[in-house]
Image (cartoon, rainbow, N blue to C red; front, side, top):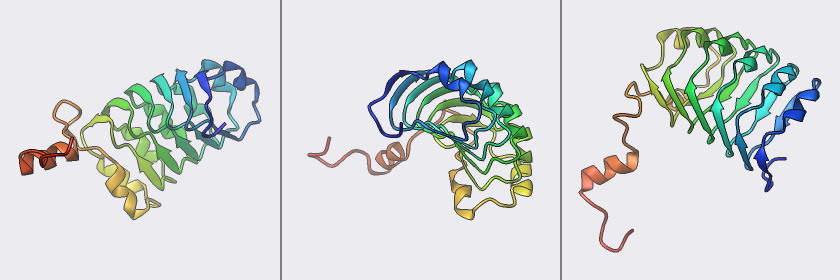
Length: 178
C-alpha cells in the first residue's frame, strides 16, 4: 500500500493481523488517527506511514509493540506531546517523526532507547533541546543524525525557516522571482 492513491481513515480491521511484522502505508492520503484496534499488532517490527494526513496524538499503545525497530511517521498531522512510554521500545533503531505538530520536550525516558541509530524529530514544535542523557546512552547513533534531531529549544513561537533567514539577510527576493 506504499505510494498508491489510497485515502480514507486507517482501517481498524488491520488490528486483527496480530502476526503482522511489517506495515507500509506511506505516500497515500490516509486521514484520522491511528486506530485503537491496532493495539494488538504487537509483532510489528516495521511501521511506516509517512506522507499522509494522519492526525491525533501518538498512541500510547505503540509502546506495547515490543518488537518495533523502525517507526516512520514523518510528514503527517500528528499533535500533542511525545509519550515517555515509547522509551520501553528497546529494539527501536529508527524513529522518524519529523514534520508533524508535536510540542513539548523530548522525554527523558527516551534515553533508554539504547539501540537508536537514526532519530529525526525535526520540523516539530519541540522545546528544551536534546537531553545530555541521549548522547550518553545512544552509543549506536550514526554521526550524521546529530543534525537531524531538530530540537532548537525555541518551540514554534520563535521559529523561522531557513528561507526566512535568507530573506532577512538579503532584504527581499530578486525582481522577477515569486
